Amino acid sequence: MKKELKGQIIEGISAKMKEFPNFYITDIAGLNAEQTSKLRRECFNNGIVLTVVKNTLLAHVLKEMNEDVQSLSETLVGNTALMYTQVPAAPGKLIKKLQKEGFSKPVVKGAYVQECVFIGEDKLDMLAGIKTREELIGDIIGLLQSPARNIVSALQNACEGKSDDETLKQ
View 1 (spheres, rainbow, N blue to C red):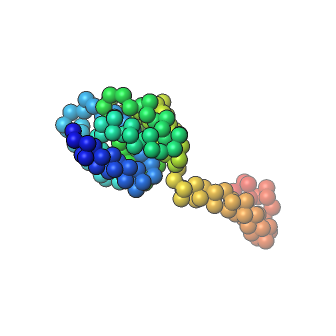
View 2: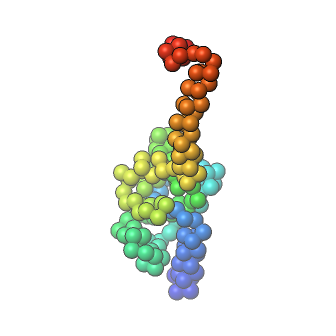
């Protein structure tokens, strides 16, 4: 491969990492044509960009990033595919779904999600359970509203002349 082409590929990977704040480093080797097609279709449907990369070229990109991300270089063994996403848990959920359907791959080697580094397949459950910023805000609002709802409910019951014991029986 010519040096110019390598430079273009490295620039392309860097651009994707700037465009998408989260990425997973996976191994998809060994999938047959039908499984690969299904994986690519599911990635497209979930807003995930899947690309196969050379480890040496990805290593060059990781060297230019902060120290935490550089630790992902240890995962660059064997075949490597990158899954770029805007939604942090989307690739994790997709991989879990495919594994339940009997797929042996993709396997998570590492991930950079919400400015945190995850290394190893054992982190898949954690990655699939990560909530988006909007989901976390919704959870917090729900928690903040809960006591207010209880107070309003108690006041309404008191105004209606029901005691707390009568309310509990209903």
